[in-house]
Amino acid sequence: MKWLLLLLATPVVAEPRFEPVTIPSHVYDGGWEHFVGGGIAALDCDGDALPELVAAGGANPVMLLHNRGDMVFEAGAFPAITGASGVYALDLDGDAVDDLVILRVGENVTLKGDGACGFAVHDFGVPGGDRWTTAFSATWEAGRDRPTLAFGNYVDRDDPDGPFRACDDNLLLRPQRQGYLATVLTPGFCALSVLFSDENRDGAATLRLSNDRHYYVSGGTEQMWSLTDGRFLGPDDGFDGPSIWGMGIASRDITGDGRPDLMLTSMGDQLTMLSTATGLTMAPFDIGTFAQRPHVGDDGRPSTGWHAAWGDVDNDGDADLFIAKGNVDQMPDMAIEDPNNLLLNEDGRFREVSEAAGVASTYRGRGAVLADLDGDGRLDLAVVNRRAPLEVWRNVSDAGNALSITLEQPGGNRAGVGAWVEVRTGTTVQTQELTVGGGHAGGSVLPLHFGIGDADSAEARVIWPDGDVSDWVTVTPGPVRLIR
Image 1 (cartoon, rainbow, N blue to C red):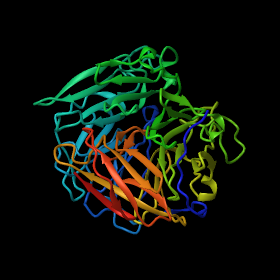
Image 2 (image 1 turned 30 degrees about the horizontal axis):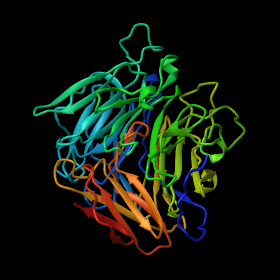
Image 3 (image 1 turned 120 degrees about the vertical axis):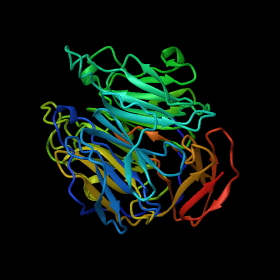
Image 4 (image 1 turned 90 degrees about the vertical axis):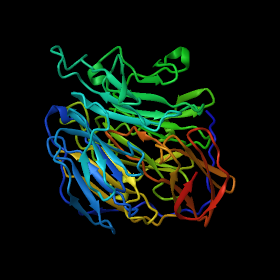
């Protein structure tokens, strides 16, 4: 297979290195309903350009970690919410302040942010339901000031014949003049990650659902819902979803063709799907991202992947890959000592560096955040663990230069969710889509991070959600705000 790689001509940089950060203790815990989940979101809730962290706790309360700078975090005041499986941050009402959606085993909760890291339960018109919710995504459809929301549900706890073959239906909520219009997406196959994305770059987002075969057992697949057609897509539409133990979705153009490629985490193989002119195709095995067994220790049983995140950790101009790993609890057929992966992108092949980088934790990893937490232009890392403390690492790599691009436009979708940002250095063009969703039970609307190597400037432009294309502008390393 031939696929295009457009790489920056940059010098070799040192190996990535991360240092652990001491934080207030937080543990994601609980019974079998919290074997999955454990999401975390990063958001700048007080406007100081330093992201805070909000982590689900399962049987323990949700925790807000207030970022005081220089990687100092302290526990912040937060509503007492237990039963949470996931956390997503986005601006639900267009007031330029991020709010929160808390996914729960039971009624979901929406919280309004006040711009000073205060959050209060607020009725945005979003029905809370009473399901076992494990996945979330949002997009803004044309002409709407409020987002369209998707909630992915896991096993139907009310099914007396469950839990196997008892997957619950999922829910699509479209904003109306008052409240939301609900569409039940059935059948459901136990969604653990959902993502709105314009995968084929036709200007219309579709909803990808990644489902857990452990509970649907047979007869289910990955799914794709068309907002335009109001139905699931199938092979006749060019979508042929595999049947996997789907845990998480990560989307990023890693081949340089301007279309998103995918990482689908699972038990066993982590599936990398590469974009082509006719759709997605499985990456060759030797790309190095399948990460099917532990790379540390002598446990040869298959790995269990959860949250995946693309990000340029060494700022050399191409996207590396982090995967949080960990046994569901004590599944005997899967690895127990299951280290996280940090896969360094080297000319389109990926090399494992997590042990040397210091992030190969063997706790039962779940949700994760890969974001610049200290504002130094390098991506840091936070991982929620089941029955073990939340871990945060500071990126201290000898890395290249980077851009941190924030979008702003009028209307309800002020952050420009659904936009595409292109960064050009010489003949190389990097492309990222601004999305909210995917991952495993956690996600955020954060500035888009672009490594540019040793370049001291670059050009950037935006393809806004309605298709309007901005002019190229010259930008320099550091924070960049592109305003429509």
